[in-house]
Image 1 (cartoon, each protein chain N blue to C red):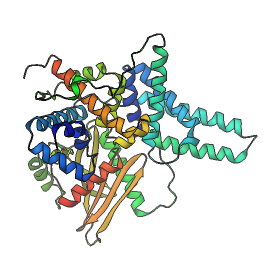
Image 2 (image 1 turned 90 degrees about the vertical axis):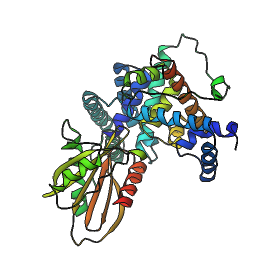
Image 3 (image 1 turned 45 degrees about the vertical axis):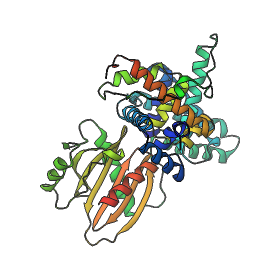
Image 4 (image 1 turned 180 degrees about the horizontal axis):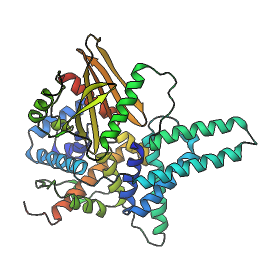
Length: 161
Length: 254
């Protein structure tokens, strides 16, 4: 069940627990059926991921409607944008736990883009279709997401190199 | 090109998303710049870790069953609601639902014209699915082509293309002996991120070479060609573009 796995993986990373991921995917599949008229052919996976993503964000927003969320801004320059001499990143392949924990610490916008690019192998164009972002924003956001991930991994317990 | 110009483009460069000329410019700059080369190495390392090392959450079987049931119910409810009003809509809804089922849960869509290749494609997909069940994937588990290749030698009378494409993101996983359409076939298993790729090969003496054809069946992507008396089928839930890239690589080396 190729698309269902892709849908579930994205939902699981966005919701960060099985129960809500289940719920969001099931809901998204029903929505997909109701709005099938909106499917104009093309890649069914991209179309389904888009619906799943919307279902997740609806739930996430509902959960934090009272919280004041600091809107983060991709284009705001930050010190990490220009690292003159990056440290060499030492990664331990065995430690899937550290990777997953670091992913979970990222803001959703960064987490989802890494899931789509690195786990599903979506192109920038496909990610732009799923997220309805301009392709240039996909590029800069992915770059920032990777930098954040690198920082998290360098700052983590596996710091010494 | 300066570092300031190159840095924001390194990710897109690694992802193969830059146009060719720009990509060459970056490549030239990275070759002469240790800091940018290190940045490229870091991005590659992270990318590799995330695709191979981070958890991939597959849909639990219970969820798939629930989704199927929910879709069936919805379909029935919609059918009932529409029946007295517009008759042809019912058929449309049923057709849409069938397509959707195929897109989401990978159930079969009726293919109108059956052909010999069709029966083989069906068998190939069935075998791929079977191979994904626990402990059915490999008979010989090794990423070393010098282990997998001799293993096949004693079992089939042809040489399947066994080569570790890890450097290009398609590591070798192992080999397996299978029976498809009443003949022994070699299955060479590769991986792309979390996606298993089965490459089936068997001899068809005297068969003419055919160009690569691609297709989708039950939600799985298929690539097929014949070359030098060997028939090749590649199947995976990997996206079509990357599966084709893999196939071109095998064809070029085969």
